[in-house]
Image 1 (cartoon, one colour):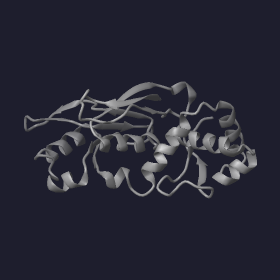
Image 2 (cartoon, one colour; image 1 turned 135 degrees about the vertical axis):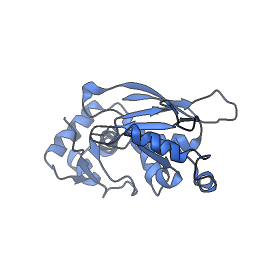
Image 3 (cartoon, rainbow, N blue to C red; image 1 turned 180 degrees about the vertical axis):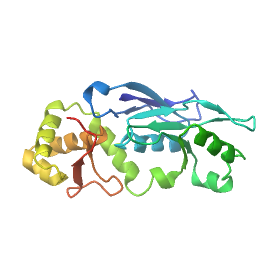
Image 4 (cartoon, rainbow, N blue to C red; image 1 turned 120 degrees about the vertical axis):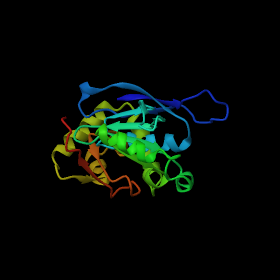
Amino acid sequence: MTGVMHPVRDDPHNNAELIAVGKRAPTEAAERVQDLVFESTHEKDCLVVLDVDPNIDRLETQPATWHLESGRRYTADIRASGPGIRTKVIEVKPSRILNRDPTLGGRREDIEAYAERADVDFQVHTEDDYRLGARLKNAHLLRHSARRNMPAARARVIEEMKKRPHGMTLHEIVFALKMGIDGRFAVLGLVALGILSMNIDEPIGPDSVVRWVEMSHV
């Protein structure tokens, strides 16, 4: 899917910028358009990282309001889903706030019980999840690569990868195709689109190993 991230409110104190997202299900026919809203830079950073997770093909923000048994209400920040995984309902909190209030205002037990009944996985994400090491920087690079319109270059990368089903380094692919920086962007764009995969927790470089995503059908 492709879409736009934008602040949930037109608030002069919210300086978040418009950000295009480049996530698409691996099959070309499955492309969907979606707007993603965020209320803080923490939510935006979490969305950026989730956007390049190959296991996720749909992101929704503020997906629904739950009416808890206590009579209180709860609206999650993000819902993430994909084939073969349990749907995640995510609350985004800076660690300093979560450490001060781990019960989420006394609602956490009710929220977790509701999630269990709804058969979804409730999670709380902090900067330790989405800003860990090189993760966020790499996610921005992958999304930047996905926004480049390079169908011919990506087709060449796919053909080359078919010869190496167990994976290649980024340097090996670019060298084999002799496409220089265009080859690098094509590879990284395919990673962002969930067709190829790599470890985004380590800095992306020539020795980064690129593999097929198991569910790719190209």
